Image (tube, rainbow, N blue to C red):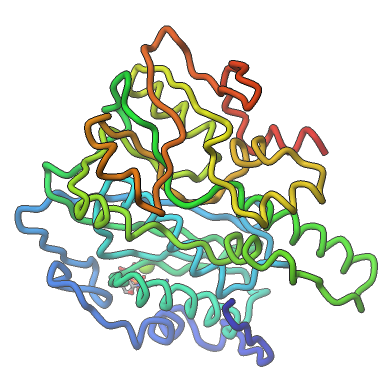
Length: 350
Ligand code: ADP
Ligand code: MG
């Protein structure tokens, strides 16, 4: 995991807004030809020649989207970038630039904002992204981060949510339910810590879960993998709110139904064992737990031979005629209608 250092406390007021921007962005390097002008003027200048431009934005608010008592700021910076890149990859695109806007209360010293930016810079380096601008302001309470990601794509490669056809195969990358369980583990440790501040967190059996909650990776590899395999999905979406809700988006926008097979949902061993320990149903966790940032897409059945042996991809169902509805086919071969409960479904159980 990422290291966190936060001992010194330099007041942001001493630095001033321009000093802070200068300090946070002095080492930013530009790597994309499409970035003609990055930070430093009234606007960045980008040139995508004949490519189509993808733009997506997300706003994260302290207390709503993240809790700094177990989310180190460096991880938060990294994750805030991932959330946005994931949306570019979900269009089958290549992410190239981001802008980062922050509002900070005077509760945060410079060192805290440095940590946040260490995570942002690390994400930019690892995913080859140019940081080309942003905005910096103060807030009366808490921290807000808004990131906009920009990407490029050739027109013929764009994959929307609305292109799925009956009989198309439903495919997911990686495995599911992980980040949500990571959050459960962290919440539990937080409660233990609040009851006994000397308790040491015991996260050894949950490393994969916690890592995926605190340091998710967007699936940059998938658009290039699909190109290599010569597969263009008919529809695609990223999994931020849970499998069920994303399937419903694809079906609704494509005007199709689907059958999702419970026994096909990819689950890591750590997810299975932790679900047993927490007395949670692993299928419910995969369907309704959020923040996995895997990609969900549909392909024509003719493409099945190209994807079937790939360890990154799992066929979990198929699309149907709209009037057949959106269904989960259980291990016991029962048909249950999928509902988009997202996190609420899991919260209600507690
Ligand atoms: P303006 O007055 O035009 O809003 P600013 O002084 O806010 O300009 O910003 C100066 C430059 O620094 C601009 O290029 C802007 O995009 C960039 N910038 C401002 N805040 C941030 C930030 N938090 N992260 C990255 N770049 C930033
Ligand atoms: Mg500004």
